[in-house]
Length: 149
Image (cartoon, rainbow, N blue to C red; front, side, top):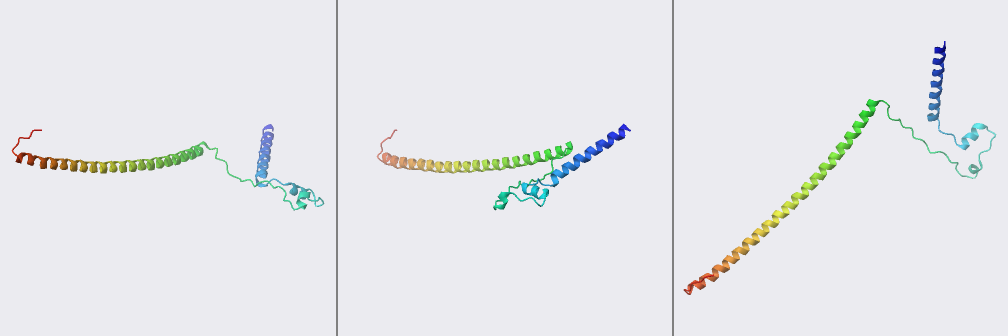
């Protein structure tokens, strides 16, 4: 008998709590003007509404489903979020690496271009020196003098 009574009381309390929770989420909170209308038709509306001022209404609440309490679902959601963050981080790192490689490649090409220009200038300078030396030596040898430098 006591077990049945406890079971009935527990069921009644659970049903009462469930209906109270549904009632809170299903119906928005009533404003002052709504309460006046509920109390009776003989009640005069509030003075600010008569003057053309809108009564303050609460902001609509957005009902969202809370996260699941199942640990496997929570783990799955956490893994999905972690994987998404990892993929985004990996993609950002990859683009950063490509940008660095592109900058290094352009710098290398510029150095090679400068080195070729310098090599060409050095070669031209050496040729000019050699030509100057060649032009100076035949004139000295033509005199028959022994030239030592």
